[in-house]
Length: 232
Image (cartoon, rainbow, N blue to C red):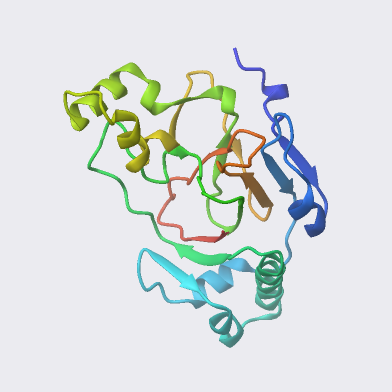
C-alpha cells in the first residue's frame, strides 16, 4: 500500500525564482516547486482573449494591449514577470489558453497524448517549467508508482503486433514513436496535483541528468473550462 505521507519525497519546495531555477535535482528529488498564492483576476485575462483554436498562444504584445481592471492588471503583471524571468534564465516559455489537447485515438490501448502520464526527453540538458494560472492543474506521479507502458505485457504484445513479427529494431521503434515515454499508474498510486499558481520545475530525460525524469500529465478539462498555462 502506498504511504501518502511519503508521497512527496520527490518534491523540493523553494520560496523564490532564483532557488527554483538553480537548485539541483538530487537523489529522489525530480520536481521543484515554488508554492504561491497569486494576486489578481486571471479569469478576466482568459475571458478577454478570443480563442483561435483549441490551443491559443498569447504573446507579450497581446497581453499589454488588453484593457483590464485593477485585478486584471495584477494578474497580467505576474504573467509578464514569469515570462521575463524564465527567458532571462535561458528558457523559452509559452503562455497558452487551452480548451483541450488533441487526443490520440490511433492507439486506444496505449495513447501517446499528454493526458497520459509521460516524461519529457531532450538531447541536451534542459528542464520543464510549468504553471497553471486558471483552470484544472496538471499532476505528477512518483516514479515508483508508475510502470513504463511498454513493459506492461498486454501493451507490449500489441506494440509487437504493430511493429511486425521480427524483434529486430523493436526497441528503436518504441523510441521513434515515443511509446517508451509513457507510463501507467499502479493500482495504489496517489497522484500529486501541481495546484493553481505554483511554479514548477520538472526533471527531463537527457544525457546528463542525475535523476529519473518526472512523470506528469495534463488534466481532463472540466465543464469546458479553459486553462491558462505557462509551459516551457
